[in-house]
Length: 457
Image (cartoon, rainbow, N blue to C red; front, side, top):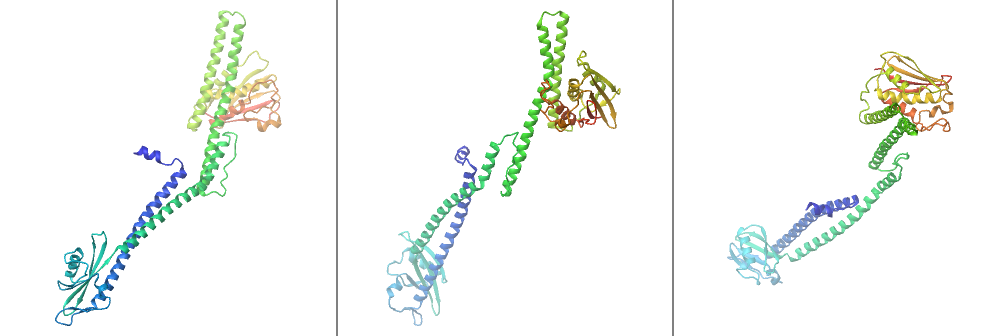
């Protein structure tokens, strides 16, 4: 049964609201029609009783009780007066309509009313399926005389039925109008919602910054527009975060993948000794492990940032991480990299893998652009640990300072470097995820100096 009702229910909100309005109107009209019909029926019955009392008063004027016995005076149109009148003296019938018999249902009903010797009314059904209303009117004098008059209710019932039919037709017309007007009103009310839905569908999820125009809309639709704007903002944020994470993974994995490819090309170039093969395997294994660490670090950081931004990042010995990073640099290159100073036991409030991912892009950029040397230092400053990466290269152009940490931006796209411009942005984002910062010292000259500030462990 429920499945049948579910299939019959309208599919659209407009149809459901229209059906609900029609059902409510039908219930209300049913109640009003019943009440109206009861009131009309009662009013018509009161009219019939008034007519019977009037006839009883006219009939009572023809009764003479001054003599030794009750007499009925003859009057003009006496046949019309006697047609529906019974006159009793006590329990004795002295006048009845010519068309009735002593044992007819109407006569028996008149006897019962007369026996009460008070004003009373009753309704009796006849063989012709008509209803007849009878009322008794006692006349108190020397003798108790009761006049009972009858009235056929067919005209009154006809009037009541006509009014009922008219009210039902009016109810049906009102229901049709209610349904049509409700659909029209709901359609007009939902038109802004359809417009907002089309706009949300057509807009780009990431690039579009348009807002829903809520001016002039009802308060409910204005709140809906604000909620949709907030929802789309969250969707854009998630998509941008995914795009950024994808770009960062691509950027970070490029270096170990390049090492693997170079080692394989070198190993396949000519036959190698067992020692050379083992060295190649070690390099490939180290690069693969580095890729795994990069993936674990970035994905873990992204997950923690989304679920619990306040999660404890852990602590790391800074000198150990910096030494490990410097050991991975090519010692035969033209740039000399020096770990100038690092306090023993200096700990930063960041995990080891995360600290590597923060410092590695800065160190790679410094080696790439330095003329002869790169200097790395670390020290404690109040409640923070500061790591400086300094090179003697050309530095960052003044015009590019505002875009230095923007993802995908490079000062010189024709410098022969195939990077995507994500390293500095990644370093800053990872540092900020643990309450730190990556900054550029624009006043340092010559060369460039970047500073990583992290909470002390």
